[in-house]
Amino acid sequence: MCGFQYLYNGEDGYVVRCKNCGHYQIAFASFMLTLSQSEFQSFCELVKYKCNEPGYSLTEYSKSIILQTPAQGVFILLTKNEDSRLYQILEEADNEDKALALMSLFSS
Image (cartoon, rainbow, N blue to C red; front, top):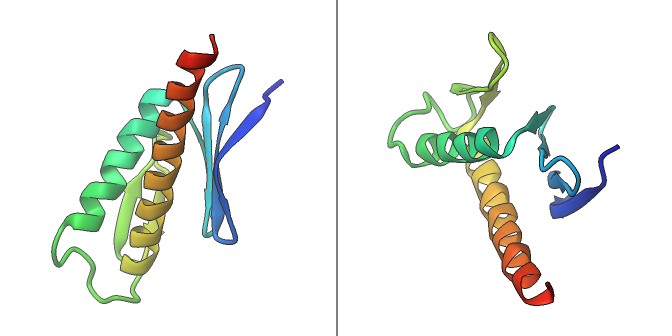
C-alpha cells in the first residue's frame, strides 16, 4: 500500500511520491498520472520543452499543447497558460524532492 509524501500541494493540483514504491502521482487540471521515477523525469522534461518552445501554441487559450503520456494512445491537451503552470508545479515538486533527498542523507 502506498504511503504518499507531498512534494507540491495547491488549489490547482498536487504532486506526491510514494515512500514505498517510489512512484509519483501528478494531479492537475482534469488529469491524474501515476509515473515511475524515470517516467516522471521524462514527463518533466517534456513539459519544460513544450513550455519553452516559442510559438508552439496556436493561441494563448487554445488547447493546442499535446503532452504524450507513458500510456499508449493517451495524451494530455493543455493551453499555454496551463502548460506554464504545470511546469511551475513540477519544478517546485522536483526542488522539494531534491531537498528531502539531501535531508535524508543527514538523518541516516
